[in-house]
Image (cartoon, rainbow, N blue to C red):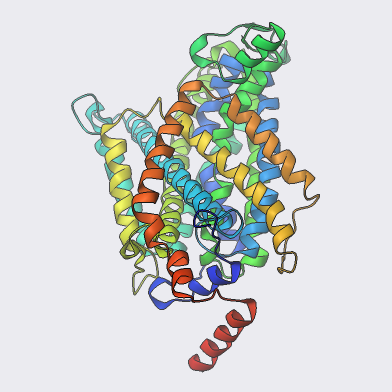
Length: 505
């Protein structure tokens, strides 16, 4: 019973009004869309478009982005329903607490900590390298085996200050940088279109060829065992394998849900922010993929900067610096939004007592969780400065997909257990659409390497130890049940809000 105890939606909402844990509501639908676009348009569009075309899918990488977008779109519908119905910080962690129980909520929260923190560290390291190349800075600024990555430390520290000052300031900074990088992306599309050669699209999906073991996911060995088919690059398997990798490029719309508690009108604005950012980014990804695979033959795009490489090969050298500038701006917003997301998840877990409650302190002036923001920034900076994160970056994708599976399942469960709950946005086609989202995400997870699964399992085991040693005995839900204190109801929450308004008057 302890492991499956849930926290009601009403109780979650009631706790957002506690003075010591109350976050400032300052975000609009536009701010949320900017956050979503800010974190989605980053490393994926500047790197993965070309690399996956060269390694797995050829021009068919366009289809890979569409497949990944479909999987994300299905999950986005579920996120939109949950985040507008349960406008509480914590995203998938909070949603699963209300539907699947405390243990599953802990697992998801621990999973999101990995996804967001590791993602921010990986991207911070990339920011340092791009900045070094853009301004021809000394190579030691980006770190090596003996020297920390000072560029990564600097950007994480700077953005931590922005995050502490407030979500509104974070939104403004993100908005300016998003405008710059969208302008650069549009430049790539418009200028690059003049250099497209239709011959480069043939064959659109290159014929299959044997695939090396180290990049093989779980599905291909299974298919090989069942049907005798060899793991391959390119062909239809290559397109699907590329979809599993480019899925990393879409990580971001789910992070919008972590800001639900700081949104002025979450019932209206959360669905707009989540779905709007996903649609905008999908269109841009597809157009960029079409342009660069049309500019040069796909096998020439296996580069750390494939967009710049495509322009160089066509003699448009002036564009490479602009693309690097767009990459720096794009990556900056990714780091900021990932840090915001991670701090809000940990804030929600600490407020629930699963982590020390002192971590959930809110700044009296800025209304942000400053303690947890400082701690997470320090951890991210340390990872980015000293650890080689290349092999661990795929864990970001598996963590995100796992969260999508749980949220999609949670929508089905909450529809059955709380049909009376007011929902301003409803996921269409329940239960079939969430089931499709689950199947799509599981399929993409199975296309990730075995090593990624093993690292993910190790991280989860560490989380189990922390939960059973500390979280289970300090849970507010558990302590409330032990003391006989009942959960909040819709009527009591409404009464509390009326009293609060009367007191303010």
